[in-house]
Image 1 (cartoon, rainbow, N blue to C red):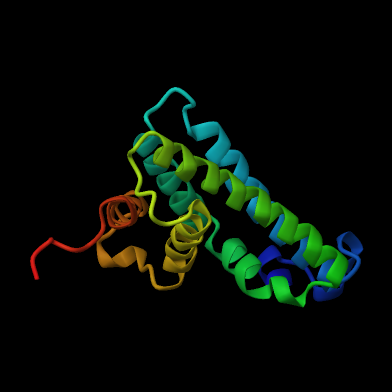
Image 2: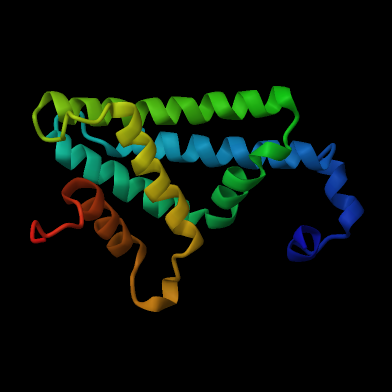
Length: 165
């Protein structure tokens, strides 16, 4: 499919790529690096913690949706990498999780985020919300990427309960 999309014969791909795992590894690394760089450059260090988290959520969501195929491949096919390459990708993933965790911790320290749940678990919950929404998101359903990011931010930061029983 890739060769067809590029207008070349399948064997021609291997002129540029040694083996399939090389391509998978590059996709995984690129997906994570792009999100890490985008979030780092978009989050304003001088902003309030909630605004920083909203920006992180918006940036992650729009980047993941812009690179859906790449991001899905990284999430699902990571397990197909050799142990050494998988470890490298997991380290990159851990760097990003650490970035998210730091933003949550800042929010907790500022009193803007609940403190009865450890930052680790809030970060994992947020990443789950952000990463897996790309599997069900349908752009033709009337909700744009920015709108989806707003919904996800609202659900994560404000919850979905009304307070009524």
